Image 1 (cartoon, one colour):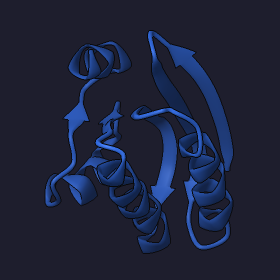
Image 2 (cartoon, helix red, strand yellow; image 1 turned 135 degrees about the vertical axis):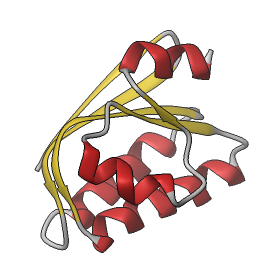
Image 3 (cartoon, one colour; image 1 turned 45 degrees about the horizontal axis):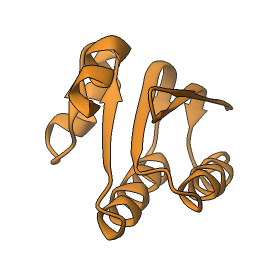
Image 4 (cartoon, one colour; image 1 turned 180 degrees about the vertical axis):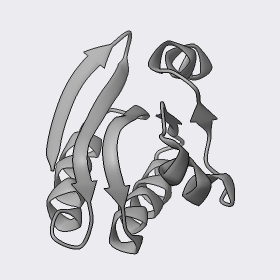
Length: 107
């Protein structure tokens, strides 16, 4: 699992590459919580390179949603492949087709 962060117009963009599963979920959760320890309240997840998502990986996004609600923050998941998108369509997550659309949604 590779995690990259960048800031764009006040939104923290988090790109995940590889597999978000039991082996990488704790590392991803810690990295995202570190970002949320600051004043950051808008997160965009670029999942275009996420190959696999397990239930442990879904937990990372649920934890992030909970933490953002406490800060009145928002997040959007972008560029999901068909398998990952299926998982999130059944839940109450904001989904955008692309990073640029996701940034517009958070503006």
